[in-house]
Image 1: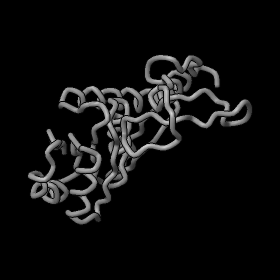
Image 2: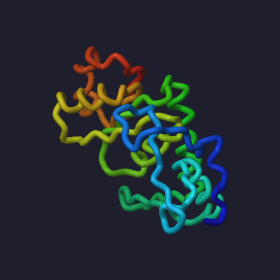
Image 3: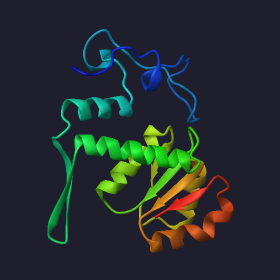
Image 4: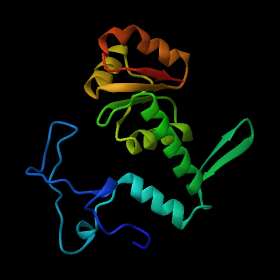
Length: 176
C-alpha cells in the first residue's frame, strides 16, 4: 500500500523474535504466519502506523460522525489520529505502563474509539467492558488485563467499579 512503511525492523512495526504461534501472556511475541503471496505476504503494520498512513493519505476524509441533539459532529482521519495520539500521551502521563490495561466502559460513541486507539498507541491493552457486565465480571476483566486506567462514561459505571478498587491493585486512575 502506498504510504505504508516497508521496514518492520524498528519502531512500532518491529517484528520481535518469537518461537511459538501462541502465548498466554501479553508481552510474549508470537510467530507471524507469513506467506510469499496473497494477504499473508503483506508487511506487518501496527495500528499506529496504519492509522497514521491513512491520516496522511486522506486527512480530510470523514472517518466517523455522531448526531447529538439534532446536530452532527464529525471527525476526519487527521483529527481521529491526532486525538488518539493526544489520549495516548494523556494515558502515559497518568501512569499507564506498557502491556497494562485500559478498561473502557461506555456506550457506542466516537470517544470510546479514540480512547481505544489511545490505549493501543500508548502500548497498553485496550479492554472493552460491556455496560451490562456484573461487578464480578468487571473485576475479573480489570484484574486480568492489569488495568491501570479505567475510562468510565458516567457515574453509574464509576459506582460499579468503586467497590472493586481494593481488589484491583494496578488501577492508578479513573477517567470519566
